[in-house]
Image (tube, rainbow, N blue to C red):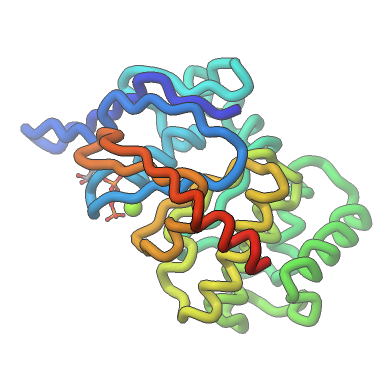
Length: 234
Ligand SMILES: Nc1ncnc2c1ncn2[C@@H]1O[C@H](COP(=O)(O)OP(=O)(O)OP(=O)(O)O)[C@@H](O)[C@H]1O
Ligand SMILES: [Mg+2]
């Protein structure tokens, strides 16, 4: 279980202090949680704190009851590799590696043999419908295909927590729907999926929608009807 406890992030911009995340407390249950809010409300900062890419000014992030946010950078990277996967809006993939090599990359970091990781990466690419694109470089893939490769890579080490920051932001609606379907399937399989989105239609599919405003958690919605609909469409 991933938990944020009075998580607070302040940035100094010259003379100005910007509070990006303001004493945010929430325990993320398994399933899909969407985070919504206006531009600048702190959504990306919150994901970066939860994933340990950034450290809070105050408060803490706990993973399975252990404080994660106060570990060293190297320790956080190690925990992240094993426990968390990421899909961002863009710049997801390493441009000089093929689709297969991108998916296999975290497996290499985890010390798997070439054979092991190639087999696993092929299976993951097949699961997102891209087995025929294994040898393509990202620049030879469509935006939607790149996002599906990014999802395959995020799932490589079977992490219990998956983060997605506007993963459909650059996609047409059909490719976006495919990406969403993959994320929903992960949530329904028991993973904790945390999704930042501007897309209301998409956030309705979440079990919980957290509303952020000026870095504060202002409202929690549970659009359960949307979940049933999403479950039926799979
Ligand atoms: N590295 C930084 N240094 C200073 N201020 C920052 C930094 N990163 C973010 N901020 C500020 O923190 C606030 C929250 O930014 P954040 O990127 O988290 O918003 P967001 O909700 O993701 O917005 P968007 O929907 O536009 O992506 C903004 O006011 C932003 O200017
Ligand atoms: Mg953002």
